Image (cartoon, helix red, strand yellow):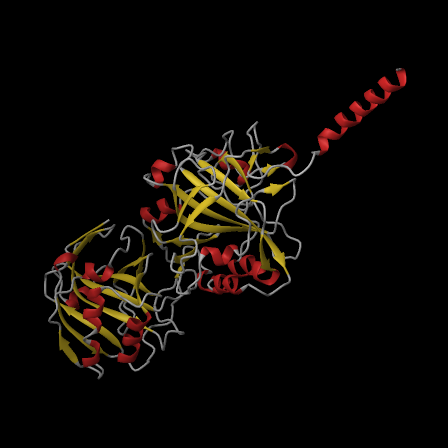
Length: 501
């Protein structure tokens, strides 16, 4: 982790140099050390790189071939060296690179508003303006995790391009509004302000322990990783080998009617502002909900639960692919949607240790050729192209509710059993509710999940029931098939008795 005095930074002036916006700092105030750097460095300035417009991103570095809209560089000299001396030293300069991404929120952090308010005064080359606000780099970086970064040896990205830079490029981007990015672009009169990427020429790029730790163990749904589903139980500390695992096959012949499984009470399922953002986890598409807004109780649950997120499981792109996790009488559906809720009063960590800490509502998704009543699903799938990259997010700006997605599903008819999460760590802490009636979604919209996200068959194989009871909220409407042999035998006995008499 870096040891810095960034909190004490006060900007001195903001100016345009060539085709970049640069902020000059107070001398010898800000210092950087640690983070694997072999020397202490004094920060002299930070500046920004941007593209032609919002549709032509302008970060200088790329991650897996993808550019961000902007990039911020904090430039520091090895302590005790002048600029000329630093340009002659192979580790004379340390630059911290921070990607800048666009958020859908209209508001940006206050200090970014303060900083960009000066841009209108520096639209001409070499123009400057004094900074009167107290703005720290910490204010601008926000909650970026500074333990996650990449390191390599490189150069300045503008002439004289001296190869004297120890580069640190942070993984997590700073997020500001599109309006803020446009202010930088307009200040530079929509001029391209980044250098094209250069050849690596055999140089090594190192990742900090923070990145390696966050990656965790490599698990997946297929056999192209360290741990496929049949080996999840070998992951350290997981519960995937337990006796109450999910998903399961629901055999309708053996479910038990339970009159205590009454109607649910759903709070804010109709709220048009409950969804915060979508994220590509690398295993699924997940929608994170507003905290403590959407609630679930009743339905035979012993506690009240607050919904945290919902996500999807799907198969392949073809017309006949099955991707649901649960099955009914060994029949699976093309997709399944899970709404995950945590028990009121418990943290997530506490809920994972409680046998009823989590409640998950499972909804089968059935394909239809109809295009009516699909507006909400068209809205959801419209966000997928913005999160093709793993861990990327897009904020939810559309007004749709969970009720919009569920449509006319009969929420009084469902199955209930105790199980687990269906991904590692597979904690056996879930009260499962699987609704009988599927959501109907247009076939082409369902195909967008595997085709746009680029991965498929994102479901865990069914697990053994191990004598668990699956209950149902609706009583059987007629005699079950296994009663027929008994009825026939009784009829036979009756006929024999009458004949003998």
